[in-house]
Amino acid sequence: MDKLAKQLKTDAALIDVQVSDELDRRISASLQGVTPEKTEAPVVRQRPAAFWWASSLTGIAAALAVIVLINSDRQPAEIAVVHVADTSPVPEIKTPTINWRTESAMLTQPLQRELEDLQSDLKKAEEKVKRDIGL
Image (cartoon, rainbow, N blue to C red; front, side):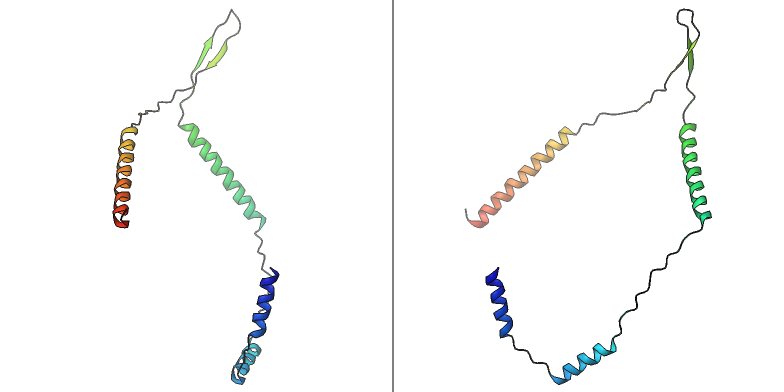
């Protein structure tokens, strides 16, 4: 690092630059014509308290609407009464079953074919490059 710093200093000492009087006047005029920017404090705009109440109530109403929509789609659970050894009846809640309607995916065959095609393309490209190079 010392060699680099030493070399940079010697190179900088060898630089000889002359500025014409016209360029010097233009630079001075342009520096004097520029005024510094005024820094203004950012304006902080506070919202009224009613805005926060309204947005909170709107959020609560939206959450309740989503809960109602989700629960309205469900059918009421059936309650069965089970008697166990002459004790008081105990309600049993049956959970509804979900019909997923699923199908198994057979992706092995198309993926295997695609892999073989890619390997074939790579082999052809390799042979072409070898021919072009002369190997």
